Amino acid sequence: MNIDGKVIAVTGASSGIGEATAELLARHGAKLVLGARGGDRLDRVAARLSAAGHDVAHMPLDVRSRAEVQAFVDLAVERFDRLDVLVASAGIGPIAPLDSLTVDDWDDMIDVNLRGVLHGIAAALPVFGRQGTGHFVTVISTSGLQITPNQAIYAGTKNAVRTIMEGLRQESQGRFRVTGISPGFVRTNFTDSMHDPEIAAAIRQRMDEIAIPPDAVAASIAYAIGQPDTVDVGDIVVRPTAQD
Ligand SMILES: NC(=O)c1ccc[n+]([C@@H]2O[C@H](COP(=O)([O-])OP(=O)(O)OC[C@H]3O[C@@H](n4cnc5c(N)ncnc54)[C@H](OP(=O)(O)O)[C@@H]3O)[C@@H](O)[C@H]2O)c1
Image: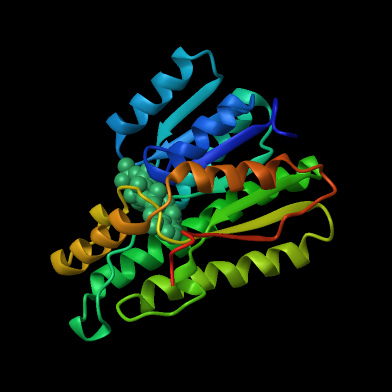
């Protein structure tokens, strides 16, 4: 695994896929910078990894703020002198049918899932450009691959990210690696971001039935990062075998 000693920043690191990814990358010797909004949960993850002897910095981070994402990337460079990988896992899914007109939730999904990723690109690109190397790993979703009712805006944000990642890869002219990870049902706290109780309960039930653990997604992220620098893993879909 080509991970030992790499400086890796993870958004959404306080829970679910981001947390599992931070733990796995730490075990492979990465130096980590962790961010999420919820200070306490993030503190606990960082404290646990630090107590286990890993090199970890962390800060409260709302990816909706360009300035905060810039400060997050700056923290990596100040603390570790470089940034090798930006893993963008922060995301929300307050899904609902379009005619329920939950327009504030549409805005939130655009701000977190799409604009938040763009803020990461804007902050990391100059660093990667100076270094001549870097790796964007972004957590997308199978929701963008198989469009289902209630998920139009969520899937739209994810597919916008998918498109932008491919553009980024083509523009990088061989300097940066770009990886999109599309998980299916994963057992995390993701339904906490859903405001419609019936939809949240239905998703939670489906998670109980078939979801894979976040470690499975973390393993796919570690696989992509761990390849030799000349190998760019473009897209990984990782979902329950039982998922439609
Ligand atoms: N679980 C699934 O079935 C599934 C399937 C496909 C794709 N995904 C994607 O996987 C990613 C991770 O989700 P998860 O399943 O691990 O859910 P999760 O357990 O709810 O974790 C989401 C993480 O994102 C953080 N976050 C949310 N809003 C944020 C913001 N504005 N700024 C910074 N951090 C923010 C959360 O922490 P705070 O709330 O403290 O900020 C938390 O650390 C998301 O992009 C999601 O779309 C999930």
